[in-house]
Image (cartoon, rainbow, N blue to C red; front, top):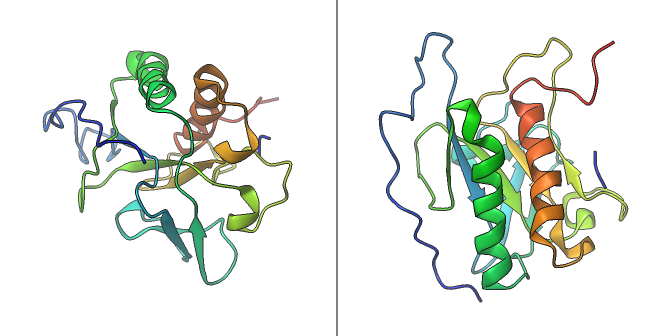
Length: 172
C-alpha cells in the first residue's frame, strides 16, 4: 500500500503482444482505466478478474470509485510515463478498454475510502509471497489524495502494477 475527459485514443491493441500463452501463460496487456465518465464499480471476489471488475483486495460487496479528476494534459502525461516505465518489459499499455480480453488493469481514480482503505493510502495492489504473476489483477492509484502531478501518479501506479507481476518493495 502506497500512500469530463474526451476519449483518449492511443492506438489499437497489438494482438501479437497480447498473449496468454507466451511460454509462461502470462498476460501482457495493461489497461489504464480512469473510470470515466461515471466511475468504476469493483466487487470483492475470491479471484482477481479485471474482465469482470473483481478484486481480492476490496472489502465485501461492491465498491464505487469516482472518476479521475485530473486534467486532460495530466492524463496524457501519465499514460506516456507508464508506457516509458513499462516499455522495457515487453508489455503493452493502453487506456482503451480491451473488453473481455485477459489483461491487468490499473484504476487511476477516486479516494481510498471509496475502496474501504484509509485516507493515507494512495495505491494498493494484490501481491503474492512467491513472486508469481497475478493474472487479470486490478491495482488502484487513488488520485484524489494526490496533487495533479503525472510523474507522482505514474511512479505510484508503476509500483502497484509491478506487484501484480511478482515484484515486491524488497526481497531479503
